[in-house]
Length: 230
Figure 1 (cartoon, one colour):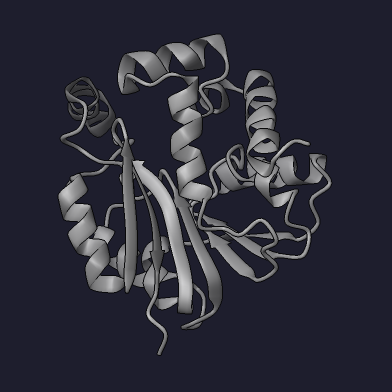
Figure 2: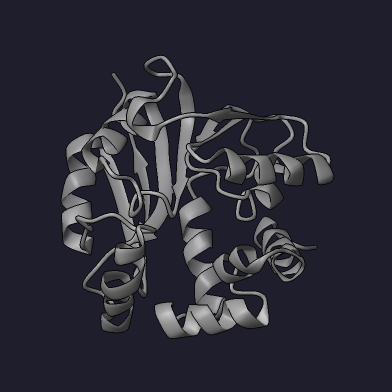
């Protein structure tokens, strides 16, 4: 019997090979994507799958609560998971309407009916306090211009006892990656400094959350945090 991890990994690789360059790169599945993963991130398929598995491990297999994903991107990393969570109420937010449109089209193609999409800014989330059981953020915080606001807002909309999980680039782990980020990604405007290190991210999260589980896979910092019960 296949596990959730196996089903998601299979979907990543199938969709990544069928999709555009970005989808193939972020799933480390297409030939060009694998090349970028190795060149920039010093990461192979197994390591790419592992950091994503860690990042998503805060979401229970039988999850049926309210989940916010920000940013959703093209949905390549999360729609395979959401297809397995038909009882959940999922809201996907992104600042880029183009990215969000691709994610919405992917959800439609996969027959996912419990996901809604909304354009918005992570620094000013359009939701009330204590709304979501889980807040998920994959590869967004290294790009957000106002990181203080992003951390504060994702915590604000999370219910007491809720889970904040995800992953993003952290500096100081892989020299090759740091050089590419500094000389290419930052200058091109894809990523926005300042960047966290493993230790600075742990300290920041511990100020906001009662429980913090932080793991690194190459230059990806993955985390599962639990907000204190009030």
